[in-house]
Image 1 (cartoon, helix red, strand yellow):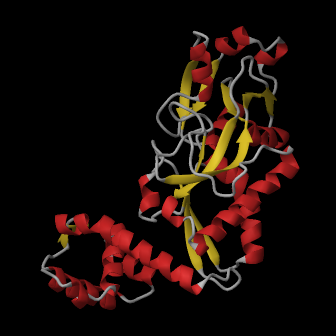
Image 2 (cartoon, rainbow, N blue to C red):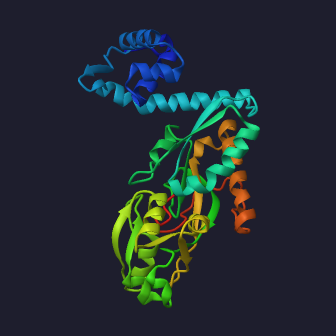
Image 3 (cartoon, helix red, strand yellow):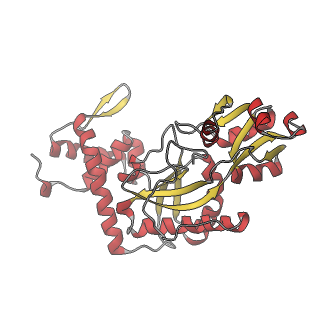
Length: 331
């Protein structure tokens, strides 16, 4: 059995890096070291743990069951150590160099990234962002291991153990190409249901429009589902399909593109878009700063769109934004 006092903790960083990407070249570049140094560290780690940890196959390095079992524990230890060190040393954004990882759909990216990047460049030029997409489900588990710093989500409730804050609210409307035949007559429920529909399908579950229609005993025909909001906008511009979309995204694009935004002929709830993070990051100075500058970026939206209701508490515990499955816009 390995005695923890005899283990170089730097080796855990190597293990974590290779588990995230089992490629010596890329892992060494990400760590800012050489391939030979990383290979040497891996050799020492294999001896210390009595396991090969990674085996070479035709597909490249593949982690052993022992390495996979150690992965979550190692990530937790490293994240806790980083948090403790940050609390002791403080954080100066003007001189700091760090990369944050945020998961969000292109809808939220289009709305929030411009004001956020402007603030970052002005106040923290050494801070970088990596934005990851959403695929099928929101990756809530990535927040626990600090693989992702924040998840930005619209109309969904995060699981227990997360904290959240409202960023902004939105409504949905119909988007049709300019000159669409449906615009020549009153756009009522019959007109809406008679159209072929285009839907943005980012996660599993019904959309807000479909849930509202189902409550009325009605349904529409969705002939095309796409994974990206911007793809949907440009498709609607070139076809007869009806796109039901968030107004914060639809209205600006309708100014520059041959698109018309019309109100839905039925009532739907307002969609809250929130930032989610793990509860143990609440007092981490680095993470608190990230949240603060994100909230400031979200506050700038009020100037363009009018005041929005905001949470009273700066860092409110996560509560269900809406009951049920993921809703449009799935941010």
